[in-house]
Length: 334
Image (cartoon, rainbow, N blue to C red; front, top):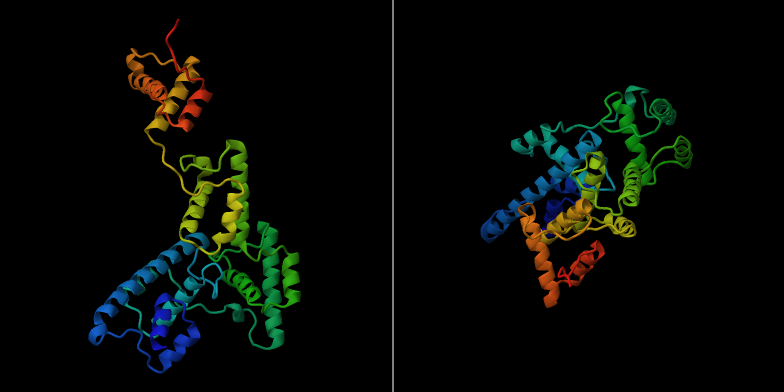
């Protein structure tokens, strides 16, 4: 049982409550004595890799949301939410190493996250709590009137209290702690309970439109006007490779529009075929002159395709592509 607790702690899945209970009795999270020393050292290396993995995830979170305040129990990455809480707890106990403190402070990590609502209306009575909620609701209404939505980002510095309050409403709703009345009032205001999912749907529709216009869903990063969409497409492939649970349903949606998960790099044949397409566009046919120095490489390639076809070694898909282009297989005249 003791070994299991250490394993869950290393994996970042042990709850804050259990960590506090074990800490209170002086529980040792790492054991480096006797024959287990080598195994423990390997465990430390593994723990360090896990720490850096979570740190990288936190960097991505800040890039998207503007702060390091990952909501407690964040459904999209509960391990990251738990890890952030562990860093604050270990910092408070003086158990966090100086290099890790420096790493976290370099990205403006918040060591203390407190509720700022009490600065508006003091007290913890039922009336005071209700007044605070109504006050923040009115502030959210004003925000929507000015910006057109209720998407107050966590990095919004104009009113950090409102940003925190909006996040707390989503968290309370996920935990079933928000009253029906408050849910209805927020719904009437057009509150988005899952902005990440909403954003995903918006990007999916952009991809559908891209496919309608271009005939495929492979958004190139070389197209500056589709930079955001190409990044999103790349992130979907990466999430699928990492087997993220959320991709089980999303992958089905992408499959329905013919999304290609693994891109095949163009080879030499494809590049030469594109050169032939360009030649035909300019000259009206595929009869590349063999003695023209301007088309020396392409002329040899065209001749090679005829030779492969004659021998029966030309791949069917390549034969089909050339056939559809109007390729002449026998140039000898009677």
